[in-house]
Length: 488
Ligand SMILES: *[C@@H]1O[C@H](CO)[C@@H](O)[C@H](O)[C@H]1NC(C)=O
Ligand SMILES: *[C@@H]1O[C@H](CO)[C@@H](O)[C@H](O)[C@H]1NC(C)=O
Ligand SMILES: *[C@@H]1O[C@H](CO)[C@@H](O)[C@H](O)[C@H]1NC(C)=O
Ligand SMILES: *[C@@H]1O[C@H](CO)[C@@H](O)[C@H](O)[C@H]1NC(C)=O
Image (tube, rainbow, N blue to C red; front, side, top):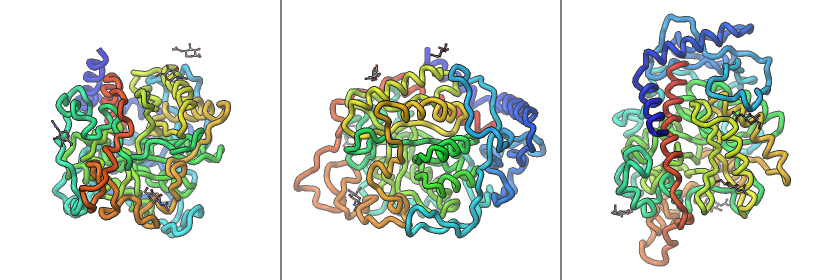
């Protein structure tokens, strides 16, 4: 039954663009009429012309919606901006798919070209403020074309690596690809059984009580609210950012980076990476890396696969391109540290259920010897309200309290090494001659394939499959994202 609901939802989201546009025009209207503050510059009126993001623009001034299908000439906007409401949040029972939207805030500080973060030495200065030009970027929220000169150039980064010849999965779930599912452990397929390799980051090793805090899919309309709350509490996190969002809200990303949050790659269009060809994976990672570089002047050395969907082929491509995969914690019994906050906007999980899941994570975490990594999101208002109103305060008031910090930090990776330009560790992220097992075949790259093998690296041997409901539920994320993109 759940499958049917999701399928219908997905179908509605992806096919009935007219309805979506109407629905979201309504939402936009409601939002702007409820605003007493001045509205932001139109998110939809400029499709081809560039959106300047200098000191005068707001963080919420999005570039045109997906694939340029914007209602140009209309004066509808995204949620209106206001600097007044700070970090308030509604009662838990009111956090739902139907909750009225609050106003959004722009980034509070815009940083000039040449400013440098003060928290790590050798930081690159910020480049000139990012100027979006549709001609320079692939369509948002679609797997980018692989014939572009950029992608062809990035493909050369795979030279010298033994990228395993593993067939693509149908939709990233076990159920749709039974042959692949049977071979999930040999493929190191995380989404189908939680299989990992030694090169994956999934915990805060040896640091019981450490909480690797992460927010995926931004920068979004409500990321600034989360940012403000984290700033008040002096807590830093890792943001796994989507390229299609980065080009919309570069000021929000700059503010996160300048404050010391870690910035990592989370693909261009949020697909299940095991479903894509090698070249498509390169395109997803390459365009996001380029967007972050143009906005921040740095290139992340880490990435997170959407939905955790990674296998040895995807992993080898990520590592060959200089990005270490970071997933989230899964206990040996198969309990995934996913708060399911992302299912609240679609109405498939209630805020109470998500909070209960969160409390189960807290309980399960206390029995681990390592610190752990939890999956949360900053794309939606509901997920931000859950974090700042409920889950993070619960983590801080737990007895003993958890130590919330970015994932690189809880893995002992200094800021310098989170970015290519300042990385000083020659074996991170695993160049081809490092002797590290990049392709998951059990022996180090560019070394004798004989000799002592480090084993399969399947540290989760014996773990069970993730329940199929959660895999199916993942579809709704794409649907929700599609709705949002269509809206703004
Ligand atoms: C299982 O996966 C391994 C590693 O990718 C591969 O060598 C092997 O051919 C696969 N077997 C089947 C039956 O697909
Ligand atoms: C959610 O939990 C709160 C507090 O425990 C409770 O008052 C409320 O009735 C619950 N709502 C639903 C829909 O279960
Ligand atoms: C661990 O998580 C499970 C849900 O999978 C939950 O039933 C259980 O209560 C949790 N354990 C603790 C100690 O909280
Ligand atoms: C460099 O990176 C490798 C791979 O992550 C790690 O094992 C090693 O400890 C790092 N070295 C330093 C000095 O940080």
